[in-house]
Length: 231
Image 1 (tube, helix red, strand yellow):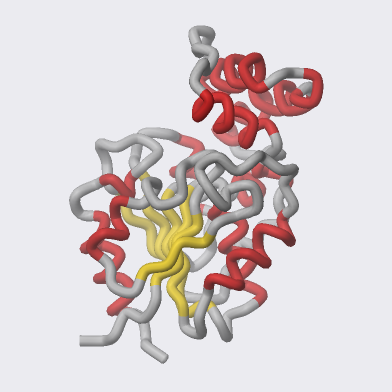
Image 2 (cartoon, rainbow, N blue to C red):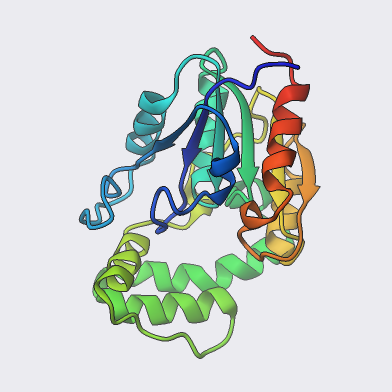
């Protein structure tokens, strides 16, 4: 049986770092990359910088790492792998927000049309107002609630500091073995998965945007990594 090596987990836009990854409990040698503004659960939000996120990810990666990323972390992990295939051995991407790869497709263009206007005025909104506008735009319908707890407001402020993921520099081919896992619930993420060139695509349904919560997620990650050539 091939050795799996170290797993480095990259969180998404506003999740608590460790709790974002239940799949990690069943994996050996796991490490958690903490992005700028996420060094603790109460760390202040900071403006997004793709190079700064990538630098943090690289610091967490030993040679031959398997990087596991979710959502907004996906494009960051993809560019790191494309630039440093000597360091990153394989990628596992849970519903990566690699929207840049699928521009022009109906599902992605509809999402951008709804969400970009909210991001354009994010600087004039407080965290609570932004959370409502962003939630409504994401779902395409009214009804989002304003956060009231400190944790909820901090999550909203972290989200407010991020650009649309379609603006990130995102390679269409990572250069390393890549597994994309989607939940089969959303046309945007299924479309994106089809545009990650050379990737293996698996659907684990029943958990929405968090297919890493599926009972088969850990086994799927291990099976994929053991199937790729070890270093």
